[in-house]
Length: 244
Image (tube, rainbow, N blue to C red):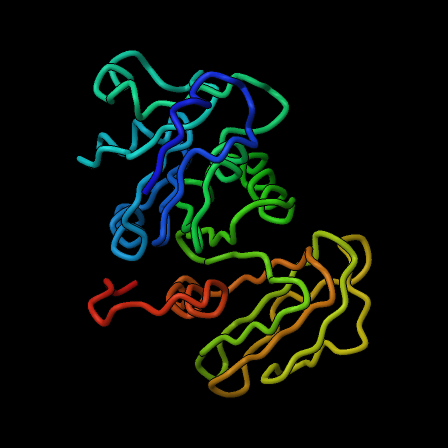
């Protein structure tokens, strides 16, 4: 793991601050389920807090490896509890703290918690960040769902149970192909203002998807977090990963 202290106060949200060979947990300042942080850290041991997410980390007894953001949501008592070299102030106001932190991470993948179920505008902003390159692949873990952006021009294979909900929501115009879905998607013109693909479902144990460009969000039930990690990150999990 590497932290770039030279970019601590330069205001550049494109600075690569955290580099990790394992998955990274990114903690936002929104609604956090009681088990969410532990589930994420079991799979992604490096903990990065987006600004006020550091407060939730400390309350859970976890010290963030890095805190990234404009720091307007980091109270003095929380800031004093964290080492100065772990705090990275990016003062520009053109992006959210989630976006700043996500763009500052280089890792095989990011599991983000505390980013769903609270303010809707923050949730929409997180969706926007996930489809706005360059960012590492990211899975949002919420109370009911896991959400991630499908890769462009690459096969995505998900190990799901028959009947599992598979929702597809385009953030941009996009085309794709599928196998293992009750309603195949080939030949459909997806776009947020025209056609969406919510409430599809798996017909057997493997769903395969491929999209010609970026912009498609895949939404699965929360219990398929590990299937999403294996499919989106290509990152095998140890057998002792905590149960979702």
